[in-house]
Image 1 (tube, rainbow over the protein chains, first blue to last red):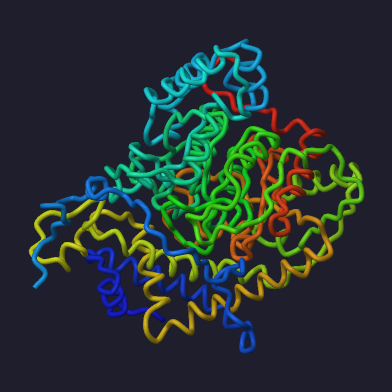
Image 2 (image 1 turned 180 degrees about the vertical axis):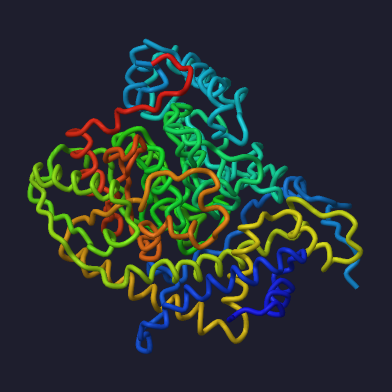
Length: 94
Length: 490
């Protein structure tokens, strides 16, 4: 086994996912079999191969820094689950 | 022939000659949708009122004697991961169930400006993660050719709506085959354009280095017409490429004499259904008879595309989907005492099983200690896969392979085993890693279900794909076949 229950719990915390007991069990087995399958990549020697992050070579795309209209505050807040006085409202942080 | 069975090009002529009005056409489509939707369930949201309003505007233009653009008055629909101003955009996820975008995706805006009429938004696998549309949080979409079978995915609604004549054309998105595989399963034409040819602005991201929007159509000509409207550089998408956009209809010539077609043998190996293989072999003979020079070739890294994809795509997804935290938009879990537990509960309740699985997988592949072994390794293999394509495409104008290893499978057949489901993308995934264009078109039937043939080409050379596809279509009848619905008069 490449993946332990502890790994799954750790990754779930990193990903901010609250998992049920059943999910932890299922994902432990499933992630293990997917990673087992992915291990076939190790058959390839890639020591002198550059990684590809993007298939199309793109360089920094720049434009002049001009002041332009952006989305109005009201519109930006229209989908907020909770807002107050033009701000997003969330439960207590500290 | 039913009005709703006609292509955009035919309907354009009828509109221009005033044989039909845009309102009549839109009503005919809305009636067709209402008649079939309890069977097919392609749509998540219908926009009947705004569609009829748009149609009336086209009619008043016609009344003034103005000329119409090629897509003006043509009813269409969009996959529900493309933002539409004022029309809810759900990604078929509970977490975005009530999300109403304050802006239009560039493709939605370009189609609006072209005068195309939006009938509604189409069902999909949640966040485009899946190969059967069984992962929608709302309902499954049924294959019009056999209601017991899946449409494929993730753009299942987009494929089914065109196959069932519920829209003249639709748009979908393709990250690992999500346009091509469902188009093949439902017997329609689908194009995944070159990465960067169509703007992703307003497309809700799954895996940003792989996602690309493209059209589903009833024939090849319509596909080129839709590309004319949606493709081209967009300053709002920094990965959009400033290239010289051609008039794609200029490639619609019935002639492939001397064209070089490569057949990479790795795509015809293990796992390809014998009946599907037979249809493909027949199609190759057809193209040879039409004058193409066909030759077998090899792309030795093909088998590594799947494992590389299933590390890269979930890694990008885990990062992209971090934004769904219940703060700015979307679902928020109640009864959370602090912010961390709000994030965790919101995401636990808002995301479905496959989305969580890919977030978990991607987070793991990117996490400290595993990054080099998984994510970086996959990116290096991506380079090798791209080199395979570069090498064979120096020699051949296009490559021909199956679109999917089987025809559409039955509901539940693969949904319990994630890896078995992933393998239905085995013929489509390599192309996304290389960023190249791919087109699927109807090539025949196996056991009464449609089979697609996939053409893969050079960067920004969609034109040659259209030329080969058009020639094949002009010399075969497969695209004319229509599914018969139970109880419907043929």
